Length: 104
Length: 369
Image 1 (cartoon, each protein chain N blue to C red):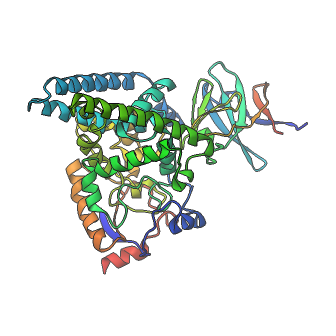
Image 2 (tube, chains in turn yellow, cyan):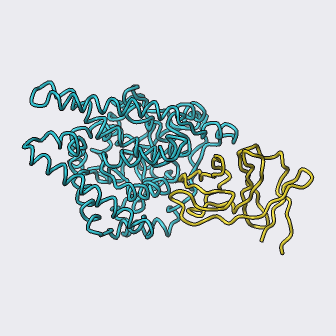
């Protein structure tokens, strides 16, 4: 089992927004949902490797900034063309004001 | 605006399976990282926000005007009074659907996705663009904007086929291709070029839509024959011809006469100030540099985006007429020298073009000779 990695402070992300987190040569996207829950996925769109952190969070959807492809960031499911491949998700926990993700 | 010549004259191969397509991949032009003006995240988030209100308002106006003008045309059919009604109906059917298709395809017009999908399907039918094929071709257009051999939506290839351009003001070439593509797709055939940008799992959807459309057109033709009147075709199908002029007029300005094979939208796209009626028909796609740079921004927020980033963009073309005054001579010159293009000049406040995006030092020297 991989270690938990500190990604950011809980207040670093606005509600209904996303933030980029780079670690060990990889890039992730950390989300804060409208109901103040945190989630994490791979940081690049599965369509054309664009950073999702530049995209738009709407409810439980992250929309890619390049082609408007949509994913459910809670499950990673592809939800709209042109994305066809799901995003990988990662466990997230909040601890003492920090957001940690478990990188597999 | 400064006229210049490219440094590498060559015959172009616009085929998606051809020499230039392969070269674009080899040289890194395909799926490249494009220039973006820096916009603070907070402001970009505000600009990207979706709302249903503006598009619902505009769609109600559009549909009401469509129904009223179509009804008027039908009512006065057989008299000259039908002409102004069909003039309006044609533009609403054969031109305003270009922007509705486009914006709803991006999913930015409405916040509610089913509304985007519904208007997208209606507009695609009217503009005669298979909703599956064109969703994917437009994705490629945004990935590889005006990259020769990669972009399937280059309206005017070099050297320009001006006869084709003129005919398309009446939708003739586009509609012919749309009909032949529809019949081919309805027969279950996806072309090799289409296969380069439509994922395999999406291809059956393109075929299904083509079959539905073929049935609708067949029914319309049958009704015209049965009734012995052109009227059914004046309402369904033909408006794509007699009403196409406005979307061609505005659409050619998007990239016409500008650079190819660059990865900075300031060089290959044109923002044009337009009158309010054209902007309603065109859903603000006259802010075309802004749209390509930030496709997440809905049409109704593009004027605000323009104000925010105009310091970093070429000065907008002041009018449709001004756009044609620079574009048409460029097309004519490309007949003699297909490497000629219009280079957009940046204001002093802008970040300069980067050499890796567009190294034209040699070209400027050539033009100065």
